[in-house]
Length: 157
Length: 157
Image 1 (cartoon, rainbow over the protein chains, first blue to last red):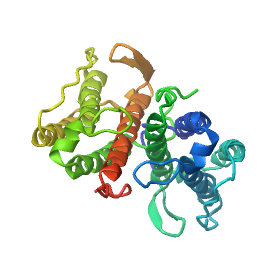
Image 2 (cartoon, helix red, strand yellow):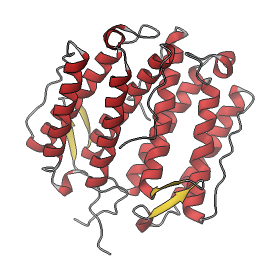
Image 3 (cartoon, each protein chain N blue to C red):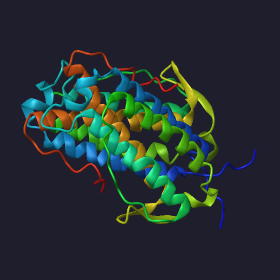
Image 4 (cartoon, one colour):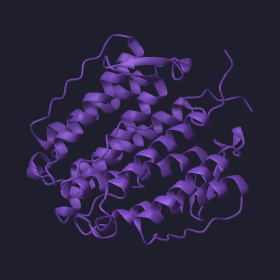
């Protein structure tokens, strides 16, 4: 198999994802505790639930990609802001550890995750990141509607 | 220079971007004409303005990456929904044409675009895509607040 030309390397992809996750963490922090679990616009889910969806995807999906063992989707919403932030930080470390175990030729392989989503492995990572950016942006609107200035979109450190 | 391992190839990256752009086009289409240029939540910009920001980034940035000629940021909001969709479609074709001219070893090069954003070329593409996903998601909230079901997030064809 020839080595494909890289637009992004695996290390670039992980760094990009973790940069987004640092920003999402700041968005969680920006919410007043009660609004995090209750406030929404247009009948959508509160931001604590959206962030819990991100957690339900990230580590379980990556673990399935590395181990080949079927992941089940299980969304648990931590009861408080502090517990959500703690779950977020635990996932940050787990992502680093599992990502290091993805074989370099795995990214172009086609694979089904969560028993239903089939595509090249890179597209599953892209989906997890895009889904996080998508739902985090809804959190930006919630914050604006609450009169709170959201964190700068471009800041990822 | 050794060939880096690919998480995504240039072709993957372009296909991913154009998939997002097809979805954004459907979001533009989902807005009633008057709401597209006027409706917003929390004092944010209407979706026509957000979509115009995406247009002001995409082709000019890619042209600068290929040609090396400095791009200036110039946001023009098309006056009607039909004109916005026409500008969107013109950019789709231009992106395909310019992207094909990006040399394979360009993605890892560090470059400044729009006279102020410095990073590897892949990160500029990632930023353009992320920015589109971010602002499009705000459009999703606007649509929900208008009582309109937005297009499915996962559909990219």
